[in-house]
Length: 305
Length: 215
Image (cartoon, rainbow over all chains, first blue to last red; front, side, top):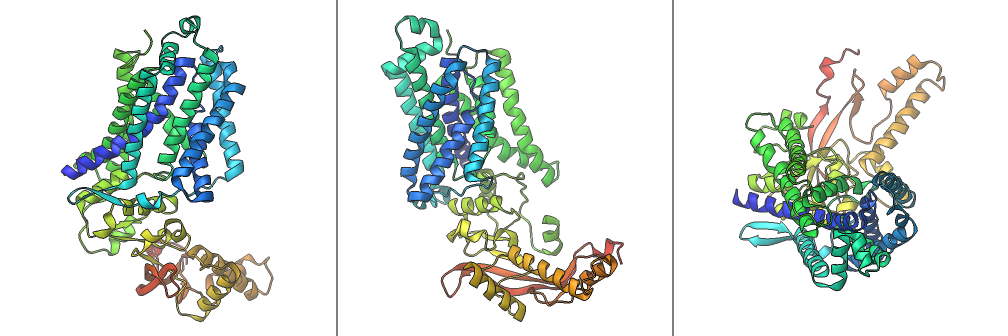
């Protein structure tokens, strides 16, 4: 039982950290540029497809991740300069409509290039086996690496946003965009850089989750919804809030999928319990979001003063 | 599928877990399997679901203490290239295998390998059978396809020899056929493929034939 709880906690941590990668980019973009970007999941999908393509071409997973991060960042910057820049002044509904169109276009372009069938992306050879964490308890090495990568990115973001000049500009932009501009921050370049960083984070999440899930058209939508829930819980514009929110959502989701069916089995039949458990876990996440909105509408760690 | 499995399985069942359709991440289910520590796991997860499950099962280190049992849909020639080494040792059951020893099958497999350079999957065998069934029926009615009643009777009678071994069509239109136990292992040429171990069900009709009103 102890190993079951430990394993499920690690699973929840892994899922939560990957959600954090997506939510961090989303909250930065929403907080600093006030841009609701529904195409954020498409950047995640593009990152995963780039990793799959480069792995098939070269066979090296590490090289593929680097190439995907660079490629997705470039695509993100291009998108920002050509299209999204014009949306900053518009209201949120126009942004939703425009980025939703972008989402659909990305899906169809990817389907044109790669087809509708999922693309095979395997875990790298060296990491596809188990690691003995405790005597008798084995955990997949790849999932451990995902947890490690997520924690490394969290530390990197903390240092970047909290300890560098550029990070200070980003935080100032999130707190009060007009004032930051008045104080001499080059807002145009800041926005492009923030969007590039957000796109790079999406690519890392896509590279980590691609071998575990399937790389297929539309893979970004389901995780994007959870990312929006996370930034609402955590607070728009706050990376600390994104981390806490993502870990909360990841743990609730995994615990719900794992322990709720076991508990429900005592008075429901097995197939019904297995269907109701995950549904209740999803409901719990949205109830948590509603509760946060009710008591702290700005989120747990609001960035706006 | 589970009901069919439980119809013939007489041993003890430690637990039943039902993932969602299309679910790709089995971390929660694998943790439950590890906690229950069964001797074997029977799963029915066709297509991409099964591929992910087998890979994650091997990555979690569960292959050493737990045997995997499944249907041919999750362990056939189209799944093996996607998964690779973790497939070795999986038991599966189906109504056909490429190494069945009858004349029709030997001809089919040899011709398929010559044309495509790989071993045929169960789906390929079914496609081949379907074409031959239609061919035999059309010959039976001597090309007069307007007589649909005669064509239907000819299809039911299926006057050709199947690659699956003994094969008849039941009164309800479903087959009466053998089911074979296969295991995934390396063959003489070093390829990872299925080897037939034994016939587990002989001339077996489907379970609901008695409830069908067709004659």
